Image 1 (cartoon, rainbow, N blue to C red):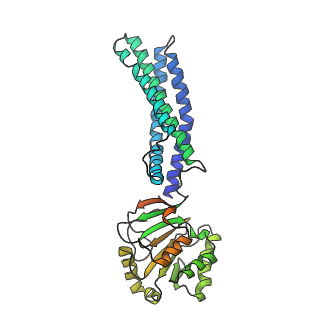
Image 2 (cartoon, rainbow, N blue to C red; image 1 turned 135 degrees about the vertical axis):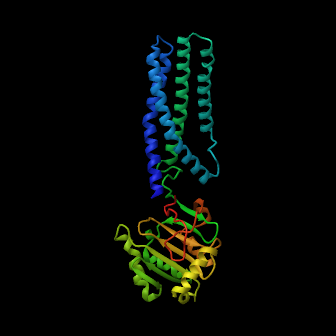
Length: 331
């Protein structure tokens, strides 16, 4: 939810700046040219006042856009800023405009008041155009970055996110496993050789045996017939430890130990919230071989990780886990 809200705010800011900047640039150039002819200084000052207010608004709107762009670029490419020819050209052009604006400032110190005001307006409008060009260049880069087939990921839905807590299991946020056919998911779980148990918001903790597979499938495919589906938690356990895990007292201790150390008979936990289109997968930092093969079947590999984040705690919702609940959508 948080990711979607941030994306909408950034998109709204880009659209606002896209509408505002042409007005600023045209107005700035017009006012600047007006300072070279017979000028109404009072009228020019009022116009420049409006220009400056519009420029401040565009700059304030542009700050979160540039911060988000810079953060994404560093996450995905490992650099603070894209050092390319286009960037160097943009910096050069902007620098020239700033230099032009600054060239008029000394003249204001040695001229009569009227001419001083005119020179100040000339420098002000040139500076406004320079800032407008810089913001416009940033906006073009951002639109290209976040276009449909661009490299950026404003909604963070183009790949998986790895969360790394200070202790305990790491966890991945991947596009919902509900999008995987229920029969294929069941086949994936069987192939690991692990014991599996699951529970949902209207189904108690149950060992996933051949006899209970229809119940599991019924819970899983509910998502496709209901807008929100069900909350489902699936536990992967070392073979032979399922009976111990089904005991409520032992289960709490095993979950607490897994949350703290990522050790014990628990090898993996899948958590699908009913209103989320992503699945959280909890595994030890170095998963067992069956779990590693399972993750590879789901395309969860080192090279497919798009974002890496320090986790601020272990999610709530699973008995025995505690701490702050992160946004499962990747925010």
